[in-house]
Amino acid sequence: MTDAEHIVKRYDEELARLRGLMTDMGGMVESQVAAACDAILLRDGDAAARAVELDPRVDAMEHEAEQFVIRMLALRQPMAQDLRQIVASLKMTGDLERIGDYAANVAKRSIVLKEFPAPYSLTGLAHMARLVQDQLKLIIDAIGENDMDKALQVWRGDTQIDEIYNALFRELITYMMEDARNITACTHLLFIAKNLERIGDHATNIAETVYYAITGAPLSDARPKGDTSAYAVVRRHD
Image (cartoon, rainbow, N blue to C red):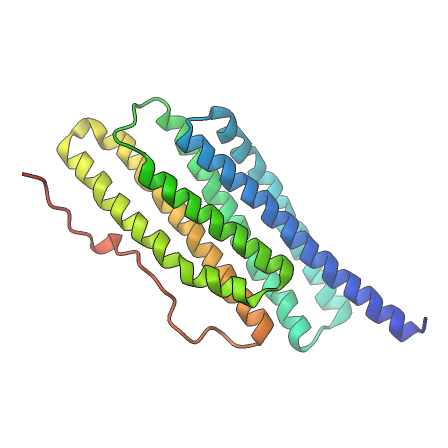
């Protein structure tokens, strides 16, 4: 093998390792989100503890990926698509780390919520949690497979999560207006729903980054967005 062939082979191995780091981090974040969802929906304290305990490990993996990218940029001086892929990985690991933070927040609030009776059925929240987990799994697959179609599927799917969040927001506000005793529990549930919605947003961020890394162009369409909670008007039932 010539020196040039050896360098190319080594470079390809480093790119593969970077992709492996990202998919490993994605898998850990996926486990963290699943544990957080179990914590809130099943009132599972052990699952909550697992979600919180995984957070420092996710942070450490982000730091490892960042250091690896800096080293590759310094030593390999990549160009064109390789450069886009490497720089994009920094953005994607940042989004994955934030997803882990939101999962830990959900888990921590679930611990507090165990002290209160559920003010209403959690069916809507469970549906939202399933959609978020499906989106997260799909975008992690898109990262590992460099799959633009899966990234676009995630990008288009965020609206449904927003719509469920809007419905939950209005419902929880109504419960709080009807009975002040519901305020504490419903406030925690509002924050939990918002954290799940933000996880969906970061999955969509990653989808846009995957698309750019592959094509070299940003998504030209406006991001589909259905979160109107800031403008919600809630009417008290007569």
